[in-house]
Length: 93
Image (cartoon, rainbow, N blue to C red; front, side, top):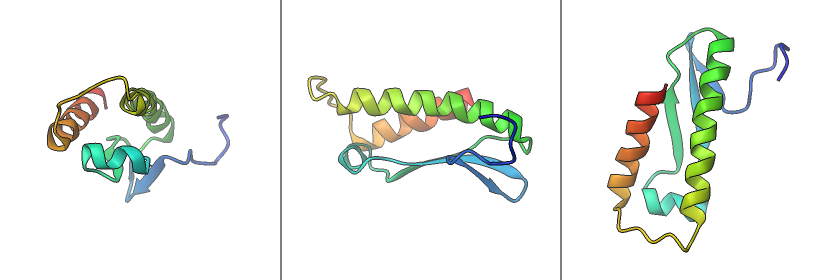
């Protein structure tokens, strides 16, 4: 994205602070017990929000890919998966 005034699709501004928000694919949402990922990016500066959102998006895409791999068996409960996702997001943002 260049420096146009357009805001990336996963960025949402609430008040003055940017947030990352993304729907979880229906086939995966039941496994983690969430329909969307929402996290504050803790900045009101668009350029910083874009950088942080890109890091979150990279993690989220990897997570979706791994979870969609049916060869990976997991005994993690939806609550535990949700906690892991939230924990990672808090550490990285």
